[in-house]
Length: 125
Image (cartoon, rainbow, N blue to C red; front, side, top):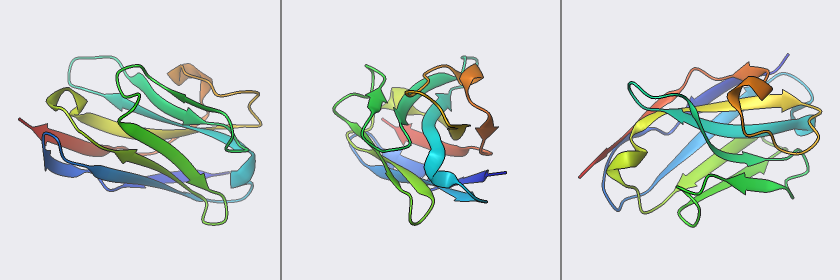
């Protein structure tokens, strides 16, 4: 069973950058599709970015396209989310998620089997 631990969150000014990491323990990391989601206070959890197990299929939410980049390093069992040009509306708790042997990259929270504990990202304007 894979366990996920996020890191890299923090406080940053608008226009700044952060890189989130999600390290996985356990076996078979390479066969998991991985996603980043976020949840702001009073809002539903929303899809941010996802990457297939081969790394060639990638999806982004329209709100982050062109600013965020998802990548994975299967040798390190880690998925990253590089966030540039941050805006105040990016403030949320960010979660990584995994789905084993997925065909494609799911974009709904209910499609994922495993979740990390979340890391807070706060963007000050």
